Length: 159
Image 1 (tube, rainbow, N blue to C red):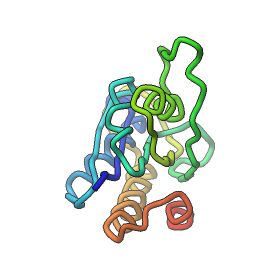
Image 2 (image 1 turned 90 degrees about the vertical axis):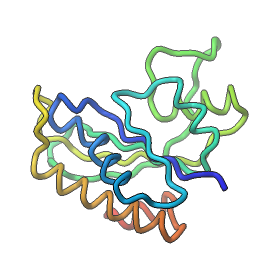
Image 3 (image 1 turned 30 degrees about the vertical axis):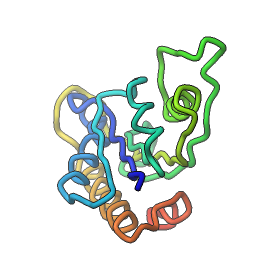
Image 4 (image 1 turned 135 degrees about the vertical axis):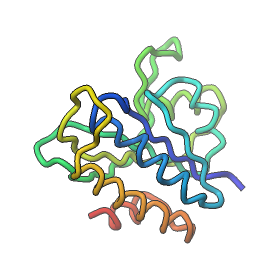
């Protein structure tokens, strides 16, 4: 059976940018069968191989905004990777397109973001982002364990 792939990414040395890796670590600790977790500093082309093997993918990252801790769920669509088939800047949609281009398939995917309070240097994650991380982990873990993880159920669970 193809796994559900969770990719938590961000810079853990830049405050709330460590949100994605934090969620990834917390999900790893849950040890949910059928769920593979990758923690990355940034998205890179090597992740395309894992994406091609997944039945569903969840990207998790911090974002800028005015309401620290606010969570958003968006569907990830394939993005054009250009005529050469490569790029130096990877976003979730670019990685999906690379997986499709190189391996012939890409899973349905979502991006879960939470608004950061600070991207300042340091390893401390704000209370709002720690609470957002717990909320995301609970929702993803519960839906993955019941095999109901998809865009609509995640969006509804994280409203």
